Length: 116
Image 1 (cartoon, helix red, strand yellow):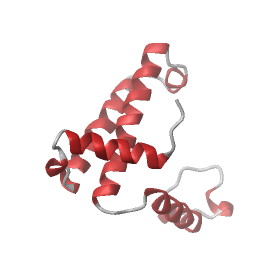
Image 2 (image 1 turned 90 degrees about the horizontal axis):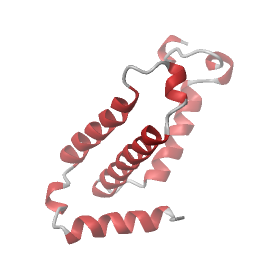
Image 3 (image 1 turned 60 degrees about the vertical axis):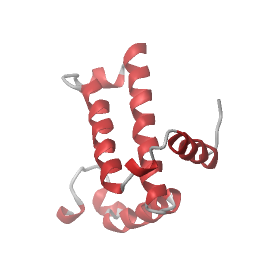
């Protein structure tokens, strides 16, 4: 089932509109819902070792897939509500990260840019 981003955004907006949920979709509410979904994704990996987290069984992988989708859909929703082009924002942020994390200083370590 291949779908492009515009199609998903349209379906998502229509889904909320049809259910009369638009009045609940303030940036504050969506940001809060997003953190809940991110926590549900984290919960799948709770208490796993690093290796176990890389080798999910079929059930856990399906659960992760659904939680990732929920996070993604909330990101699309908040970007729509705030009138932010999510792909443009991602490209802009990647460019900023390239500056904050220059290859010669960031390669092979997990230090924050303020520590490089």
